[in-house]
Length: 183
Ligand SMILES: [Zn+2]
Image 1: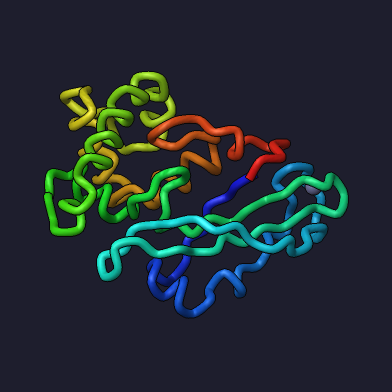
Image 2 (image 1 turned 90 degrees about the vertical axis):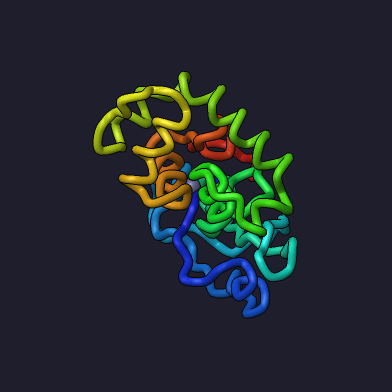
């Protein structure tokens, strides 16, 4: 299972300072609910974009539960599950800003937008329950506006949706459901 945790650093510092080594396990196993049973189980690596360097490789901390033997990985909140581009850059692009960061990843970002627009109708009820109010124009752009108003971008809504509902703005993934053994 994967959980998302807010970290006080961006991808460059996370990688340079070996921030993954300081990631503590959750006190409660998200798979079986027992306490103080998670032991370190190494890391897996993934890439994420960076304004300074293009792409940075980060290590994601994993733990294994001594009771249910399932794993949990802790994804830093600047990264979007299963997506290469940094959340901050996706947010800029979704908000209509083509910054130099976004320009480097334009085809991918357009794909993300299409995926968001296609997936949104399936989770409209869920999103509606976490935003301040429904948009006057209930298309993808309208929903993005109310998401930004409530959450200020992709980071916080993603951690909210993953922890409460096991979905992201781009899909539903097995790793966000309790009991999953995939990372
Ligand atoms: Zn467990």
